Length: 188
Ligand SMILES: [Zn+2]
Image (cartoon, rainbow, N blue to C red; front, side, top):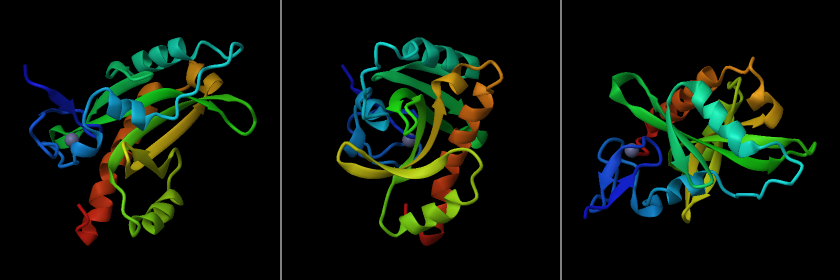
């Protein structure tokens, strides 16, 4: 039996023997096994409160409304977004607890690549020009990665007027663009 590792960034399946994703070069050793990478991309998992809306159903419906291929991943779902030049980008959806105003939130997270200290100022600069979502750093299986995060309140995620397809696609494109933006320094 061959083990396949699904790249957390582009969702391509890789042979277990590979150290980096054959498609995008993201190291697989640090975040190798599906579904663990996805689970890490969307942690910390918090048990929904009894009086929370049915976030599992809400996330399934949001993913379905996006129109992209999606599948279970950890405690949430992974949506696979095809981009230009035959690239793929994975966007993870999960319940993410409550915000400071005690509103239940659904997080959308997409992995860009390994994070280095010198990137952080650039990420903050880039955040200043983003309308929806932001760049952030998350620890995935012990290593720090640049990610794009967009949080929606449960009410927003559920609203018919919320364009799930546009939101997911925008996060995917933003995450995919980060490496190219930062790679002027030949980081990756
Ligand atoms: Zn990849």
